[in-house]
Amino acid sequence: MTSIDGFADGSQVFTSHHSYDLGTNLEFVFTLPDTAAYGPVSGPVELRLYGYSGQYGGHRTSLLAFKLKGQVIAVCSGDHDGDFDVDGGDLATQAAGNEGIDLTDFAEQFGRTNCD
Ligand SMILES: [Ca+2]
Image (cartoon, rainbow, N blue to C red; front, side):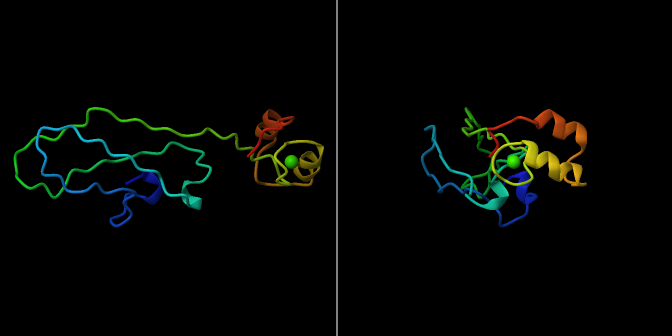
């Protein structure tokens, strides 16, 4: 579960198969859903891993490694016209009173051409 879905029951992004193999390290690989909720994430995301439905009680479960791969995409909230830059056209919109971003943040983004 992730903080994006609020850790709601039924919104698991991955469930492993049930394993009867004791003592062998298992590797699970999954991809986060390709949905708008997991699109350009601009804040921290918390992942929670739960062990459940064990065959026997009292056995230890451990996580030996965790790898997260991803792509960092530059998001420009000052790109008002959506053409992947923050330029004069966006400045005109900003000056006209766009409330989506304050002037300080807009100024920091002005001139960027790598917005996604
Ligand atoms: Ca633009």
